[in-house]
Amino acid sequence: MADTHLESFIEKELSKVRGVYYPVKAGFLRRLLTTKAPLSKLHPNPNDEFCSPKVGPNNAVFSEYVSAYGNYGGGASVSSLPGSLGSPILVEKTNPDGYMILNGHHRWAAASAVGLKKLPIQIVNLTQKKDVQRMLERTNSDRRVTLDLDETVFRTGADPCIEKPLPFPFGKIYKERLRRGIPALFHFLKEQGYDIWVYTAKYYSLEYVRAYFRYYRIPVTGIVTGAARKASHGDAKAQFETMLAPKYACTLHIDNDSVLKTRKGSKEYEVCTIRDPGAGWTAGIMDIVGGGR
Image (cartoon, rainbow, N blue to C red; front, side, top):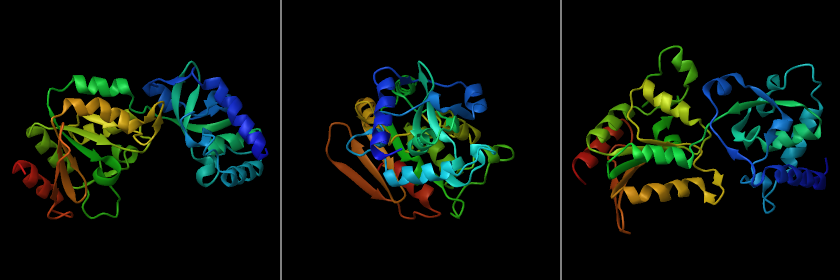
């Protein structure tokens, strides 16, 4: 498929979904049992850079996938191929039919170019506006704390300051590791009257993150998944923030080194440095919050 053919193919597929398709929640059994889908059921995401005329696909990456899939003889499952070739394409269920691609556009286009019929998929339910609205309706607090799930809450296994993994079999299902002290910190913040909102740029299912916190008995008010994705009218996180900001008079944003405090209607802010960003991270934050600083 030449570059012009690729562009024509993308535009043709986009014409089928623009103004027609929108994401809907996939039930537990569908998410559990659906591991592959016909390419005819996979739709490009109009908001993805891959589909933008100003950015578009990376032709070198596309060509590499075409070559790799072209060497695939069809005798084994695509999911058995090495590296990203066999990794599931991340998708959302859509109405009226099929799935919207979140991650894996180049593989989808390359598989179409060489005539493959199916690809492995993983269905996720990202946070939508109506989810945020329901979360807001369940709370009366006017104070909140925000944390980045990827940068602050979850840590790598090499980090010495992490919580023990969940017992079998949950440790096999939920492989992310929590920073040590997160359960205690979240309970403390809740007792102090703060709503707790966590954000992740990754394409975790909302149910996955919620269940993970439930197993640690961690109180969380709101979970925003896929925050970095582009929505129909701009950045998804910015849209959610527009919904959240009017409710809260005070916001604390906690990161690895500091606590940033802002107030509604004011451009001023206060930054409090966490005295020990290592083993004393949690205690340092409790001192800052509890001391009213």
